[in-house]
Length: 243
Image (cartoon, rainbow, N blue to C red; front, side, top):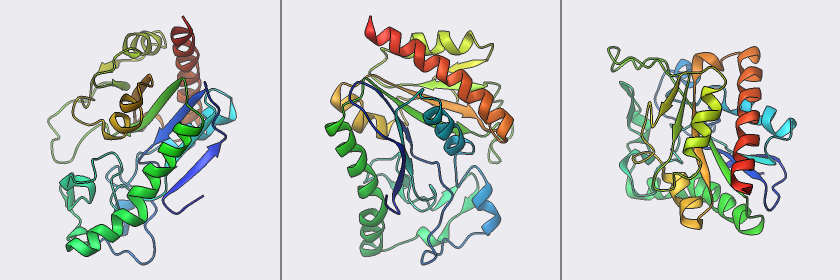
């Protein structure tokens, strides 16, 4: 374990590896983001429900292991390229994050402490236990404070970039659960796919990005239901890969 990541379960070659970039709201005591602490329970700080759903998926054997980011996305956004401006966000959904206005030395120290160890662990796990499939798990807010006019009716989104091998089967499996499924909604995997580009596409490993709507996974009952749905989806995708 590390302050940059935590892992649930044990990875196995030919299995399913889950990755949750934004699964924690933790801010180390020696980092001052300059924000109201109440914002750490907000979607700008954490993908609500991801850690709990990931743990259930491992517990039920639907995935072998889950690698989860160890700090808030406001400390470092691991689903960005290292040189992207948003890797240390100075604002999110209308909220300024003044503690991230860092000089080059402090920026480098933040990346060396959190960003690189997180991605190094994923890379080492993939190299040692090449999975048959990677599941990237995120969640999205039903409404953005900065854009309240933008409707977000989807229950779940399916994201991918150039490798779309699993997308049709994932969409079909989730629609079969009676959910409204967004194909590249509410975000496009063509734009926001840095972790999967790096660890899945670059290694030709089939993957799918899943965005759960946060109000559906904000309590234990919703998390259990979503885990059941995703477990069935994973089983369907595993059969798809095996064919």
